[in-house]
Amino acid sequence: MKTFIVTKLTTLQNRYKELEILLGNPEIIKDREQLCVFSKEYAQLADITSCFQHWQQVQENIDKTMQIVEDPEMREIAQEELNKYSTLLITLEQQLHLLLLQTDKDPNDKYGCFIEVRAGTGGNEAALFAGDLFRMYSRYAEINSWTFEIVSANYGLHGGYKEIIIKISNDNAYGKLKFESGGHRVQRVPETESQGRIHTSSCTVAVMPDIIKTELTEIDNYDLRIDTFRASGAGGQHVNTTESAIRITHIPTGLVVECQDERSQHKNKAKALSVLGARLRAIEAQNRQKEESFIRRNLLGSGDRSDRIRTYNFPQGRITDHRISFTTYRLYDVIDGKLEILIQPMMQEYQANKLAALSETI
Image (cartoon, rainbow, N blue to C red):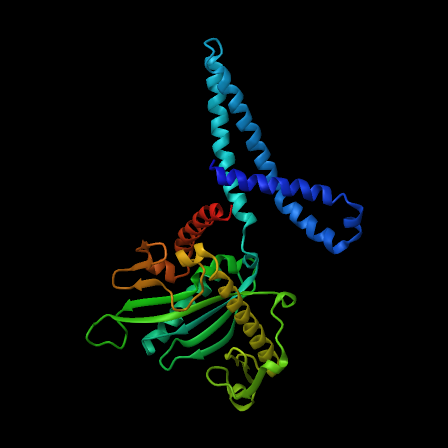
């Protein structure tokens, strides 16, 4: 195992021992808030500390066995023991790598998420592609038995969406889908194309964690301009005759959120505020990520709409993720919701980068 990883694990082991002492301190026990924080950290380090202690013991056994392997009378037995310990050591090192990544996990991964799909260049074809992406994400949610709801939808003139926002409430959804943020480009022959020429269109996707209210950035009411208007599009007579739709403008940033899917003005306002809070939190996170060299270098999880992350080539049935140079010809499976085909390689690359980045922090 590399020296920098052993150093990191030793640091965590020392912290675990320090927490063990702190949790026995009467002053800490009296302070419920501090006790809760330390207890949580102690529990999080328990598995990795136990595994590291096991690794240290096996490594010690290997060193001792190496000392007697040269003895002709003990060589055969010692070699068998050495092989057994070496196999166990490899298994423990793999476990430690995974546990080490978990200790450095994005705290937002545990939340649900908002997925915002917006048509970009390409006119009507871009709106139709936005509809395809919406179906892809909704099918992926169904495959995972997640519940989702449409927060806001702005329909295209010939189908699809100019913009659509959906909310997935299930835990860990953000951790799965956060790498979908960025520019998605499609190459195909539009239904309206009589000459059979391939057109290139694009959509942008933003995935934002659905943070619980107590952890969201506090929004000052004085920073908001709230307008009501009559809803348009699908929904029957009611949405077109009452001013139930809400438009909220966050004056300091210029962010605008609209919601018109509910009949109740109050429900639309609540949904719009939750999306606005998520967007503000995403901006804060993106600014922090610009300081993290390994994320900036590899464009993993930047969430920047200008990043062209993926190309969907329908004539060839091919999808390419440009961030990790990964190509698959299972385009129609992916569009039908089998996103794990793309998510798994991305997660593996991300974990490999994070593990390598640990050496930069030691």
